[in-house]
Image (cartoon, rainbow, N blue to C red; front, side, top):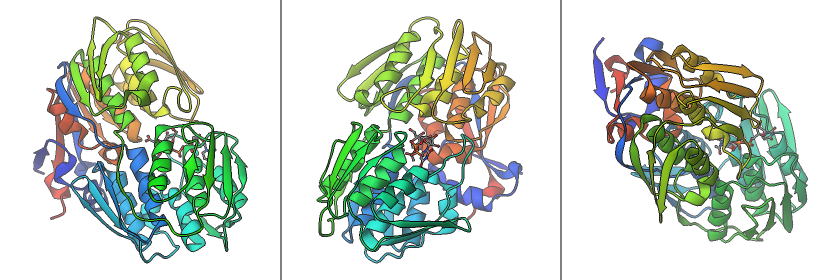
Length: 449
Ligand code: EPZ
């Protein structure tokens, strides 16, 4: 079996590999040789967890929408399949995505929906636009059960009738009417789903205990550019005044990805390197920056540029993932991997998901000393990580294994790249461009001509 070596995922669509490849022997792997300090400048791509919602929100209008700074990642390709399965027309040209949702039908395509939980974000727009939606129940995933009860409760509060039968969710609404909605917990997706439905409901909707992530503000800005009337995003109370008529098309540029930027910053710190990241909106990642500084990294921010380098040995940390503006759960695996090399014992508590420590077993195979008790991981450092063959279980666990590979002595081979490709645009290529000895290996049999 010949190996075709490529430096990044831009040479193929992860979907072609995954859907046509056989067992483990024909899936791509990343080989990382640790010990090289990363030096140079890296571009940060558009925010995955914003762009997927803006794609869903584009269903609220018949007019063409243009979304710019779109990352070429698996989840975007998957959401394109969802939108096209609903009847929309999409084309991605470089980082510019054109969407025209002129003629829609309410039934979302099964396969892409089951690939990605974020597909559930089309429920609000479809109920608002068509008065009906039928979508497969999004499964749980490696990081825990991920129910959608808050999404459904919010849509019911707006007047939709929702049935859950035979693994499908079927929603109908002759008319959506504004309401006051109190979330039991600040769910990002549920907040966004209700914002989109309420934007075209009759009357005013107030969401209390809303999620406050920067991506929520993106959804507000996008819909307001379409003619919507939303305010309060970024706080725990969001007010939406439904507009009587249809919304209009929009040309919108997405913010940079704060989690990719955080991941790259951790790579700089763990490798003892010196990286410049741009563009970065540092206000979106203040606690990540504060924690990296507390661990002993030096950070310099100028406009939309962040320089991060390491001064001496890394210090241990107490990390507690929380809804925004707390420490982001999507950065927990990556910083935990970094802390295995810190001089002392760190405590990492995961409060958002029930089982987001799947990366720990693989880090242990590399020599890490970590004990997990429920939602708390105790990381004893420093330990000399050694390269091993490891398998990613989810997107951020894959990123954590890359972080560990950069620090490990010898070669680490990472399987399960379909997880990494969902949310990072050519991470291997970006790291290789600043000196990482990292190679993506794609077995030639797996490439579909
Ligand atoms: C978004 O997921 C992100 N995904 C996640 O990023 C991120 O981890 C999460 O927000 C929290 O910040 C996208 O934006 C595409 P939630 P979402 O609803 O909206 C529970 C990544 O790595 N919950 O805020 O699904 C849920 O089980 C991904 O990029 C309910 O109980 O997150 C979880 O424990 C992973 N009922 C917690 O709330 C509901 O109806 C937070 O979920 C909804 C959620």
